[in-house]
Length: 120
Length: 448
Image 1 (cartoon, rainbow over the protein chains, first blue to last red):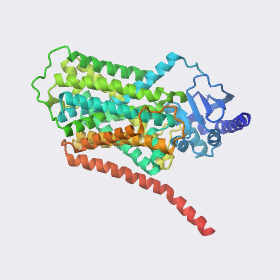
Image 2: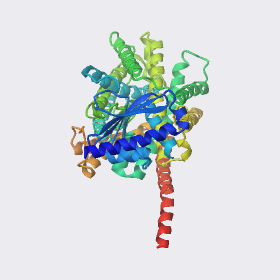
Image 3: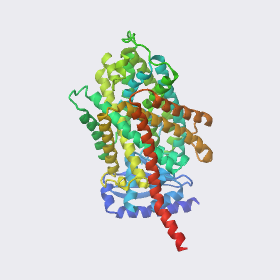
Image 4: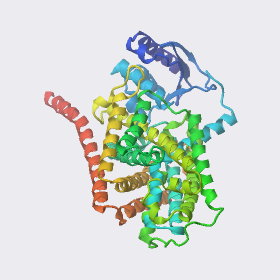
């Protein structure tokens, strides 16, 4: 189960990476925002790190969860896949408590701004 | 990806949460309210009211801690109440909180002006209030955040200065010995406790600030009672010191009673500095939290969509910040024009008491409706006690509303108006969102 879930997550994140890196308006938004984001499932043992550097998603890698990161996104595997594939509105999921985002206010808004530009 | 977490960094992280909770509760308008409380009561009775309000907030904070552990990182008021009471009631309570932020901004900016005027005597109220709201709005628009370590230092400094100024008053003969005691009846005590709740409001804004999931097991939930313990101690000592040093008639006329105390203790400028720090931390949190809440509601189609606009450069909800700032400024001007600070702070305190009561009820309700949900933190308070505490909180709010002070018609009208406006807005936005779906459903049925 874990391997299948892991592969599905990598596919969703890779598609998300391609969208972010292609979107012209995101270059302005992500200027100076170099962050490591942990994407963590709360129902299966799947965890990835997404590295934002120089206005691009530079790298997606498996994450052991030991290091301290400025941003952690946490939800069920299905919810996270839906969020990164643009099927569900992260703002609503966040309000309903289905998606958890541990970050400063500024970083939370930046993440939401990314989803707003990509999908709304 | 950064360094690993050590026990000492965990302790610092917990202290940061405690400091954030303390910082959000300290406000210039809180000191103004403390002065007003001397109109209801004095002496031991007032001290008991201040302590009881602190203890009650502390007990309710445990319920809030449990809710936070169920919904980590969520914007508390909207999420908890939506889960417990449904969309419309939750939306009404969220609008009520936004109403509190607006009313509070008027009181806070005027109290800030009253403190600043003691250093800049020619400062007009409009200029002072505009400076307070404008500065915080500009900070928000620029995307500036007060660093967490700086918040910790600011909160520690405020606590320390207030403890020192209160403590110094105990080393001499009291200046005020002839003062008659205030009201001693039960109604006065209830009203004083209701007003004292206002001193602690804002402590729960720490709940969305957890840095990582495990912060909600204990660090965030216990940060609130810890902060309230400190706040109760500080406000308790300040109440005694004010009663010893400043005549009662001056206290309930003053918006800056702590500065009056500072004058007598040779710490006037330090108390003015306390006012500045208090406004900076609370106002920034209130305005920022309010604009974020408005933005999220707009994203959820529970408010006008123009508030969901973000700045391309900073990613900030620019329009929501401007809307909140302009509304707060408008409220400040109105409160100033009608000299309605006492009434506005009374309405805020009563509304907040109602909201806190709802937190207690929401937690008990969710224990029944979502019994199986994960709760990394469980309030060590039996449900019937949580309900009793919620009832007591509501009683304090009602007692404050009923107390003979200020223009009661304005207090009643303002409170009823705020409740009615919140309920009406919630009804309209829920209905507006449901309307297209109903049309679509009817169309689908007809096509069948």
